[in-house]
Amino acid sequence: MSTVTSSTQTAQDILSNLARTDTSADSVAADSRLQFLTLLTTQLKNQDPMNPMENAELTSQLAQLSTVEGIEKLNTLMGQLLDSQSSGESLQAASLVGRGVLVEGKGLQLTEAGAVGGFELDGPADSVVLSIKDSSGLEVASVTVTDVAAGSQNFIWDGTATDGSRAADGKYTVSVTATQGESNVVARTLEFGSVSSVIRGASSTDLQVGSLGIFKVADIKQIL
Image 1 (tube, rainbow, N blue to C red):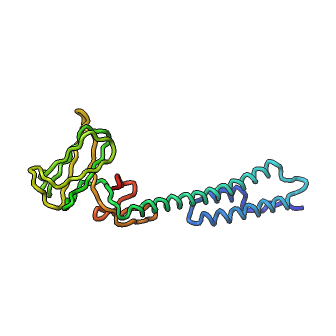
Image 2 (image 1 turned 120 degrees about the horizontal axis):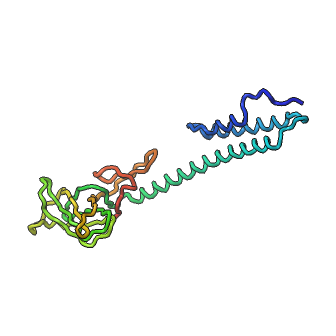
Image 3 (image 1 turned 60 degrees about the vertical axis):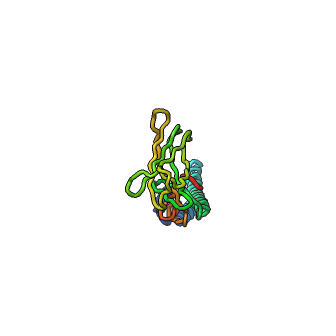
């Protein structure tokens, strides 16, 4: 009975092949597992009865086979999880089409129905003052909100200017100042827009928010 001594590829070599990551990872894993089984079967069939494979060596090779199968199953599971996450994000994004949302921005669009804007606070505030300015940078109105919790908030401006007149419809900008006692609170202005479409890319799902631009789902501060 002869022994196998001329094989150029060992079980460890096959296992090492699985550690490589490339575009044909699934094919490599399947081929390597088949080669591993073929090599192990040949070793068992052709071992010298006077010097059989020791139990420790056999156990080691079987453990390597188990590792090969584990890697293959893990790769499959990870792929399924990523596909599921991507599909869930796309469904969530699709449900936002046609909805009004707040994203970070300084714009405020006044129409005959009024204007919707927002702001975000890093902490609670006793007072929040929103200064509304026209295209020349002149303040035309201000909105004050008191006892505001941390997080994103929305507000409505009916278009009434500081002098009591009705401001002209059009584009305005907003700045925000927030205080808690004598301390300033970090605040950001939010802009209102309507989700017009969903853009699914290779690595993320994005939203087209009207003329405001493209935003990630995580960039949506509030859904109205």
